[in-house]
Length: 130
Image (tube, rainbow, N blue to C red; front, top):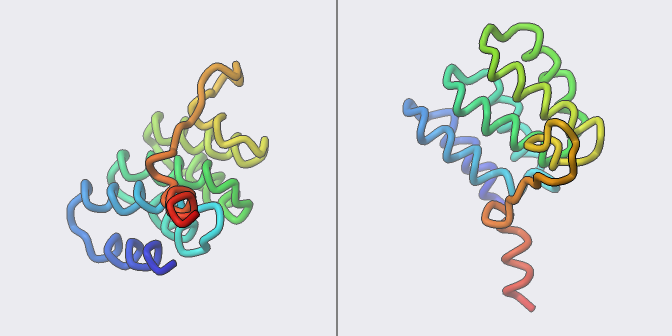
């Protein structure tokens, strides 16, 4: 699917934080099986908006992609924003634990789940095809 690639291009050219956050959000559902979506998340870790960085951390947590480990570690050590550091730490924990729910369930209670059904377009498209 080309959508993550198109979202990445739009992200790069957008001046508005809300548009960039939207690009990242709509790529989340593709991040498990699409390299462009993961690369968008990694690029968005460097965004000036903390909202965009939050979405990037969420995307990478959902992806469980190990190539995000180093960029997340770098963000944890270089960011001056406490929320961003916590979000990056939660995404890193999710990836290392192989459980994307830990991005929102930061105490590992098992009671909080990251519900991305609306974001996972690949899943809904395959269900509609059958």
